[in-house]
Each structure stands twice: as C-alpha cells, then as structure tokens.
Length: 410
Image 1 (tube, rainbow, N blue to C red):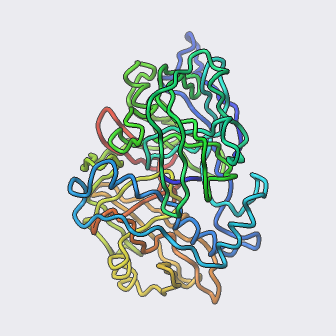
Image 2: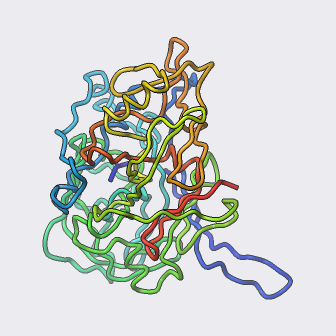
Image 3: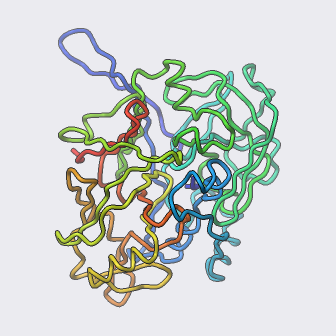
C-alpha cells in the first residue's frame, strides 16, 4: 500500500545433523531497510516523518470493496498536501541517486520475473495486493531494472490496464501481463502483474523497482490473486504462511512458515476479523509505563508503513492521559529523560515496543513518539501499525488460519 535497496543473495537454509540433511519447510529471503527517520547527528528528521505520513494509498479501499462493506466511519480523505519546505526537497531529489538517505524507510529484497528471469528489487508490502514493476517502455521511471515482455518466453499480455494511486498523489499505471515469478527459488506460473509505463511523485527514483502486495485478493486492483496466494494454489509452498523478522541486520521474509530461530516461545495468533482485504485484527491496546491508555481498537498490520497511526481524536485522548506534549502535525513526544515504557497487546501476551517507539531527539529536550494522529480513512476504530511494531515482534501472516501471529524475538 505504500512505497518504501540493495539486491541480496538468496539462500535455502539447511539443517545439519548426524543423520541425512533435512530441508526446512520454508525459505528465507534476506531483506534490508535502506534508511531511517533520523539525521546524521541522531536527531529526528521531522521532514522525513511528514513525508512518511503522506505516502499511503487509501484510494483502493473505496474502489475495491466500497465503503458500505468496510469499517463504520471509513472514508477517503483528500489527497495530502505536503508543506512547501518538504515539497522543495522532494523536487530536488527527483534526479538524485537511489542511495539518497532522505528517501524514507523501506524493506526490500530480490525477485525475478520471466523466462529467463529478469531481476528486480522489490518492496514486500502487507498493506496492498498487487505486483508491479517498471516496464522497459516507461521513459520516466528512473528505476534500476525494467521488464521487457518480448525477452520472456513465458510472458502473456492481458486485457485491461492497471492503475494505482497513493495518498500523496503519486501514481503508477500500465498494461497487465502474466508470467513466471520467482522469489527465493519459489516459482509460480501465470502470475498476474503490471509492467507500469507511467510513474509519478515519490515512486520516481525510489530504491525499490516495484512492489509486491501481500494482502488479501480483495484489495487487488488487478482483480487477481497476489503472488503468495498463487504459490499456495500451485503448491509451491508447504504452508500458507509467511513471516517477517525486521532488525538492524539479518532481516528476512520467510515464505512457507516461520523461522523459529528468530523468536522464542510460541506464536500467538489473532483472527483477521474484516473483509477489507487488510491483515486487520481486533482487541488491541496500548500502555505507557504499565497503564492502559487506549484499548478495544482494530489494527491493520502493514509492512509497507514505517510508523503507527490512529484516528486523531483517539490519539489525542491517549496522549493526554499520558501527559505527552504535542509536537504539531499530529505528532507527540515525551521528555527524552523520562520517555515511557510502551507496550502493546491484542488480549493475550504483552509486547514491549519501547525501543522502536522512541524516534529520537526532536529538540528542546523532547523525543518524538512513533505513533501519530492521522486521518487515514480506515474508520473510527481502526489504527495502522507498521514497522515500529514489526521491528519489536516476530510477525506471522497466516493465510491457512486467516490470522496474524506474534512472538517474542529470540
């Protein structure tokens, strides 16, 4: 749902023992976070935080499922308008290299499309459902790699046109194809995707060539199964689960189960309770220093979002209980010398997310919190939990169980 670099080697993990070697059920895909929301001096880059806030795609909610079928109070907010100071930086970056550290935070990994395979760096996004990469016919894409349909013996053009729009006004559109797609050796055939011929806004020059949506088919603008659903239907994976481990190093997406070397104890699953197409679960609560300050709300778990967001009025009430300070633009903070312990729960285990929740020094002795108030159009009781939460927990997305699971990091 949101745009977030480097190609990394993909390896199948083997378990060694005195008996014959046994292959693990799943496959590890190394992924890497390209940048952060802090400046070189360690203080918060507030412009980067604002850009992150305005990079989300909400248009697909209205187009795909209709507001009458979604959460009460849901709507599509107007296209966001960035402050002039941020606009000027964005315009200046259009011609900068892909290693620019001001482009925001994202997690990427390699895939290949076609026969023979054409390689791409991809953002794996649990907040959307479509696969798209730049076409060789896209003159303004500024990507590292492009898809050439005529170079693939398994490419088939399809009818119709793909189009997706993001909350900052960025768009991507182009023709639709089917072709073989391989991720970490897991190959599927006839996967529907778009080779876009037009990109605009923050998509131009982003470190990721394209995006692989990993949410439910209901969100698909292509009206097709996402890659992982195709992998399940073609028995390319042994389990209908994929999992994320996000960290400063060693991050991975695990296809076909979970990597028990990355977490301790058992995985606590929570049923997906919405037909929205998102990985949305209910019963969430947040506590500061052991005191519950918000509870009983739904959360969309989204790897394509860096921070956390909630309805402005609910977030304001939460922070008022905790005596937090408003930093403007929906952001809040606490004294750096007295930043609280922050925990989340979905009615079972309690998970400490304090380390990721503190974005760092915002000036005047205050440290900015990673949860902001923002009208995302998701509904009055739906919050968005991104990488702030996923960096603090091992996260499992189970198609088999229609559930999201969490476990303590090892």
